[in-house]
Structures are given as structure tokens and as C-alpha cells.
Image (cartoon, rainbow, N blue to C red; front, side, top):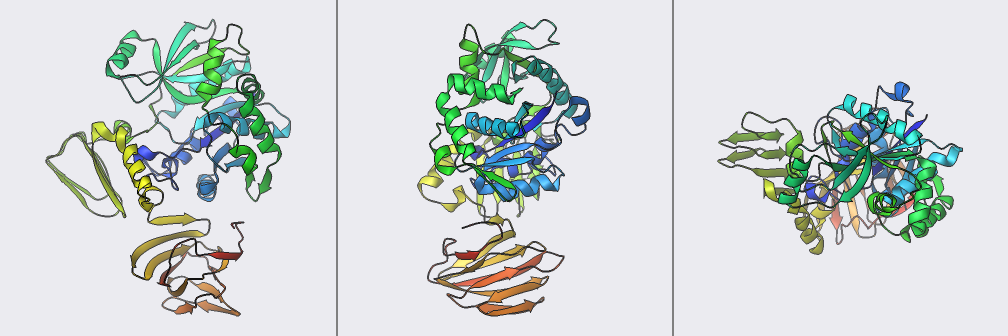
Length: 483
């Protein structure tokens, strides 16, 4: 029985703004410890691979926008993806699972897929692995398995699963009754009292071929579009790119709606739908109040990160990325500070943060999509100051990495090395610069910045010109295959 982990890493996490942004979503953030949520997901079954028959490397489906940081984070924890499938556009979880199933069957096998969203928290890994083992037994018998979290409060932010009768010899597994939408407070309280409802975790198991069969049965349009997009795809370095136009034409739908609901409604289903109860400290961390629920708190119920000073403050979450954040005489609030935005919200209104992001997008504010610090495959840059006709960036280049050979139509650049060694191509010249040395890149000149050393290269870049947008880049050569 071979189990293939699949990580779905396509979410945006807008309710965790300003920390989560479109180009750096919540699964890439370290919200509960030293590892990001993506890294925690990859490590979730570590130590149980041999006993459970789990493949050591996951299949990861992610948006192409953050492919490099996804690959880098997985390598950093020793869990590089066996296949990193890129979605050119988001189409929800049903198409993503179809792509993962096709990737899993590419070698001619039909493993059991353990499908996990990349942006969840599970604090009790041994309990999770026990549930996976139980689910794998059901999946090996031809079932489609979902995991229902045993609720500990009347939560209105989660969907629910109504469980049916116990399965003979199922060791706690139950027949899946039906899916239920997010309830209001009164209905959530009745579900908790009833005892027959579990939170919908969004974690699934089932054979790769079975997922494709079910999609072909219930959503032939999705299955056909994914087959076409995958067949016309290509390998690009460490990634697999599905065909853009074919996948963009694929309808968007979730696993719940596309597969699970019609499966449970059929009188003679293609496969049995099973629920495995999960008590493992699960949270989808869908909003700031959900994060407050799962992190450690002080005696006053406060959860803090960073440089925070609290006085007469209770039951709050305060997150500081760079500056001191001080709170006095407040209760049940969320305060999040980043270099370019600060959000203050009532804790019971954090589900509405998405509406703030919508307003920012409508007003075309860049804070909706990107942080001030932007990650690139070669390193990162931080826009530390800007004004009329100038911009200042702090650029960090990883050892051995290089920016593209490029030019700009509208700006010139000054580079000052503050750490490490830079190899600079400027027109027909190649020069080496050490600390406290600088050079000038005239407007319209082909140039490249490289780090030939063994330590990170840090430079200060001063741009000047009539237009300083990131789209004023013409690339001639790029080792990362960017246009």
C-alpha cells in the first residue's frame, strides 16, 4: 500500500492580511513557529513514512507566481517535491487534485493520495498519523476518505460534515452523510450538542485513479480539461508546467462540490464515502481569530509575536514584524504591523478582513498584492524609500546566484556594495566590486548583477528616472527561465 502525499498550495489567505498577500500567501508564512505552514505540512508525517508506506517526497500543486519560494522552502526542510506542478491560474481544489493524480500516475502506478492543504495547522502529529493510517485502510478497500475534525466549540467559520453509521471493522470510521454549509451561531450550537457533526477539514485520501474516475463521472468538463492541460504540459527545470490555455479554460470547483456531494447523493455510488474523525489540534487558520485559538497565550489570554509591549490588555493577538507595538487598555483586538501596513481589528470581525483587501484591490493599492520586501529566485529586494523620480532598494543576492541580463528604458541605477562581492556586467565591461565600492548603470545599458562569493551579497540600489515600475525590465538572458 503506497501512500503519496499531495500538498495543495494555491490559496491566497486574504483574511490574514496584511501578513498574507496575493504574491506571498499564508502557506509561505511562519505563523506558529520557525517553519512556514507549507513546511509544517510537508513535515507532518515525517517519521511515519516507513510504518505507513508513505512516499518520502510530496507532489505539490502551486501557483506559478510563487514557484521558486515554494521549492526553496521545501528544500530547506529536506522535503523537495517529487513533482512540483504549476497552475497558471487558480481553479480551486478539484482541478488541482486532478493534476496531482495525473502526476502520481505518470510512473504507471496508482497510489493512495493523501491530499493536504498547505495552509493548515495540526499540533498533534502522532494523532494525525494514526488517523491517516485508519484512512489508508479504508482507501485501500476502494473508499474515498475525508477527515472530519471533532469540534470543541460552536464555530461559524467552518463547513460541517454530517456523519452516518459506523463502518463494521472500521475502527471508528463512519459513513459520510452529507456536507453542510457554514452555519450561524444558533445552528452551530445545535450541531455541537447533537454530536453527529464534524468540521470539514479539507483533507482527503483515495487512489489516484479513483479521483479521475469520479471527476469523469460527475464533472467530465473538469477531468477533460485537466487531462488536456497535463498532456500538453512540459518540464521546466524543477517544475512541471501544464498548458496555460487548456487549464485556463477549466471550470473552477472544489472537491466537495465536484466530487463528494454528488458521490454521497448517489443511490449506487462508484465508491463508498467515508469519514475518519480527527482530533489532532487542527485549524485552517482562516482568519486572525483562528490563529489566536491555536497559538500559545499568556495569563491574560494574549498571543504576541515580535517587539510588543502590553499593559492592561486581554485576549488579544498582537503581531509586530519590525517596529515596537504597544497596547494599553484594550481587549479582544488584533493588531498586525508590517513595514508597509498596520491593521487593527476587533477579534470577532477578523472574518471581514477580506473586505479590506477587496477595497485595496479596487483602489489599486499595491499593499493588497505584495509586501515591501519581495522574494525572487536569486534572493530578495526591499524598497526602503521612494520619492519623485527616485527609489532606494536593499538587494540581497544568494551565493552563486545571478539576476537576469537586462536593461531599462526609463531609469538609471547606482549600486553600492555593503556586504560580500559583486560581479557586475555593464555593457561590454565586467568588474568585481567589494564592500564600500560602487558603480553606475546608465539608462539603456545591458547589465547583470551576480554573487560569485560564498556569503550573501547585499547592495543598496538607487534608481533615478521618469518611471521606476518593475515592468520596465527587458530580459535578454535568465537562468530561471523568466520572460
